[in-house]
Amino acid sequence: MADRDPPSNTVVPFERRTVAPADPNNLLRVERLLREHGRSVARTYLPTLRAIDPRDPSALRSSLIATHREALEVMLAGAASVHALEAISEALDRALSAEPDEGAVEASLAALIDSRMRLPHNLPIFVEAAIFDLVDLGFPPTVVAAACEKLRRESTYFPEISEIVAACRETLARYRDQRRRVAQALADRRQAERWLADLTESAATGGGTVERLP
Image 1 (cartoon, one colour):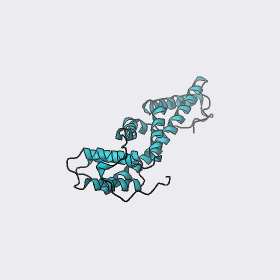
Image 2 (image 1 turned 180 degrees about the horizontal axis):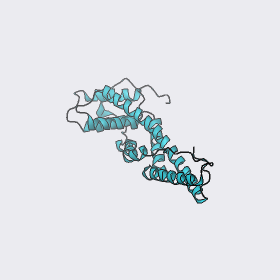
Image 3 (image 1 turned 135 degrees about the vertical axis):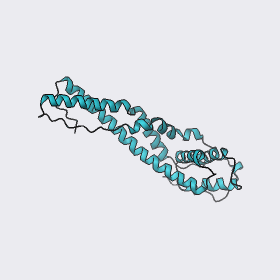
Image 4 (image 1 turned 120 degrees about the vertical axis):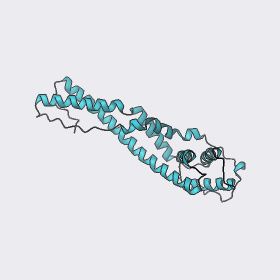
């Protein structure tokens, strides 16, 4: 990440902060995309297909082509679309490359605080310390927002700063893993479409070779 000015050690009371908070709803776009398309992304993969050898008997080649086409069509019917995969990939890339931002961290913490009846007695100091730590540790704004949302929904008691940091680390690792999975799913989807086009052409020409299959 780019070099940043070191955060000030001076504590500014929470109610007197001048940083304009970001919209937490915009910061949760990645979470919404993953919830909406998570299952279809998991169903996007290359099925294992037996290679079609041009030396195979014609009847066997025709049978394999029909079987392979069906397997690919079934997978593609339940798979995430290229548009959805590209949207998720772009959102994850943007989220993971974003610089830490005090205003975004404050907005995420505010959403967590507003949902609680019992809060720390030293809330302004707690918030300042949390902002300092989360920015200093380099967490992107979207990661902080998703971690705070998870804590808001799942934690019984108001979390300590160490718990917020742990949730951010877990979310960061999950987003990096999801980016890898989405990239693989996009590559698999495009390869499956090429194979299906090749198989369809081969079937139309009498079951010849299918060069793109392994």
